[in-house]
Amino acid sequence: MSAAPSRAGPAVPDPFRVAGLRVIVTGGGTGIGASIAREFAARGARVLIASRSAEHLEPVAAAIRADGGTVEHAVCDVRDQAQVDAMVARAYDAFGGLDVLINNHGASFFQPAERITPNGFATIVAINLNGTFLCARAAALRWIERKSGGRIINMSSDAGVYGAPGMSHYGAAKAGVVNLTRTLAMEWARHGILVNCIAPGPIDTPEAGARTWPTAEVRARVEASTALRRLGTVEEIAWPCLFFASAASAFVTGQTLSIDGGPTSGLFVQ
Image (cartoon, rainbow, N blue to C red; front, side, top):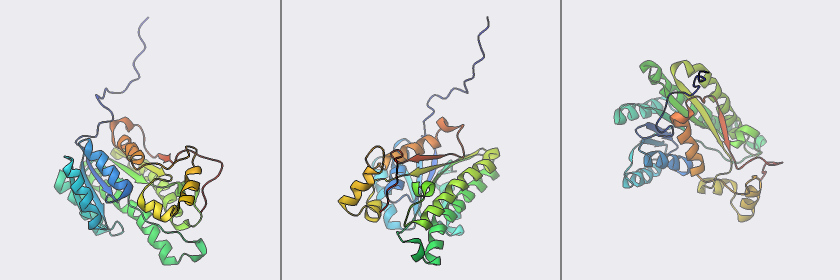
């Protein structure tokens, strides 16, 4: 009897390898974005971090270089197409190209829906949703022109999956990121562009703590809202980004991965 034909794909020595990749991380000056940049650089990727605040970028870049990593940084307001185009051009100038775009930027504030002004709502949507589209489009246009393919990793939120009282503007924008991810994945698959999304739950960063769990009592309630009864770490968001950027995820596109410590019977409500 003859052996059955192999169903395995082409052999990849290390399917999780990211060394040599050229990566942009928006929102790369603090919290999750800084961790993503560090994790990629530590594994040999060349990283450009971007933020609206230069003072956030410089310490992160200095730390990565001190550890032997390759990093550039650029000030960019993702709501401005010209600044976004310049950011992508900077990666091409510095690294000779771009392989992975990680749309990690974001902004929010707590406010009951009836008290959010039209301008406040539009601002949060512009940063979180419009900015994600503008960055994705700028990268995709280059990849399509060069027939090179690429990876886009968007950042949504549990608020975009389940909703979140006091964050209707942010939740709506992040829900849009989930849908945008799936739509772009369908449209751009023929160009070799894979688009995926991560939806973090409560992650332990100073920024999130000040905004979401400002006291020990509130923090304990947030921890209890997850099945694992703890907050996530920034590395636990960065590591799945490595997967989505690597050959290990070559047959994955249009997906949203919730990283939230597991579902419970009810969501945390402040």
